[in-house]
Image (cartoon, rainbow, N blue to C red; front, side, top):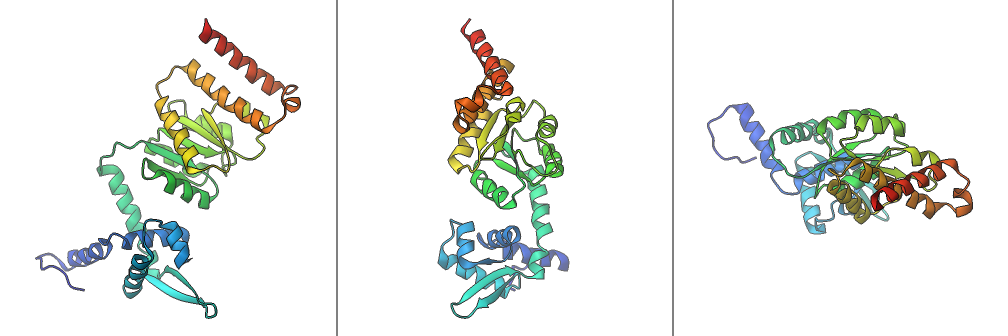
Length: 273
C-alpha cells in the first residue's frame, strides 16, 4: 500500500495505513454495518445504508474484500445469492471503533442532546438509533444492566420498553431519576399498572420515526416545566392511550383508571383557578 513519506516509527506508519483505509467515506460505514447486523446480502446492506448507491456499495465491497476485511460467500448458484460478512481481521476492528467512540465522546464537542434508547430487541434498538442519530447523541441499552451503565452518559431523555430484560419498569424509573425525561414503549395491550408508572409519556409499539422524533422533542422542550405540569402531561398521555385501547365499559370500573382520571381532573381544576 502506497503511503506519503514521513519520518515516523514503523508502528506509526502501520497506523497511518489503517487510517488511510478507513478514510474513505463508505469503508468504515460498511464495516460498522456488518459488525452490527452480521453477514448480509447486497440488498440488505442497501437497506441498512440508505444513502449509498448500488455502484458505490459494489466498489466499496470489492475494496474491502481485497483488503481482507470482508469476505464474499456464494450462498446459492441458481438463483445467484451472495452474502458479505467480516473476516476475522474485520471482526478485530470492532474495539478500534469502540475506542474511537469513547475518544469522540470525551473530546469532540457537541450541542446535540443525548437520548438513551433501551429495548431488548436489538433489531429495533439499531433501527431506533438510525432514526435518531442525525439529530441526537444516541446511546443504546439492550437490558437493565446496560441501561444502568448508559445513564453515566447523561441522557436528557430515556426511551425504554416496559418489558426491558433485567429491569422492572419501576426500577427503570428509579434508576433514571426525576432529572431526566422518560418515554415508555408499551405493547398492544398495556396493563393498568402503567397508569401508576411515573413516566412522562407513553408510545404504543410499533412506532414510526416521526412519532419518536416528535415525542423526544416535546420532552426536551418540557425539561424545566413545574412538577404539576409534568404530572398533568404524563396523566394526559397515559389516559389517552388507555382510551384508545380499551372500551369505556372496561375502563370505568377499574380503580387505577378512576384514580388517574380523578387526579388529572384535580390538576386541571387547579390550573383553572
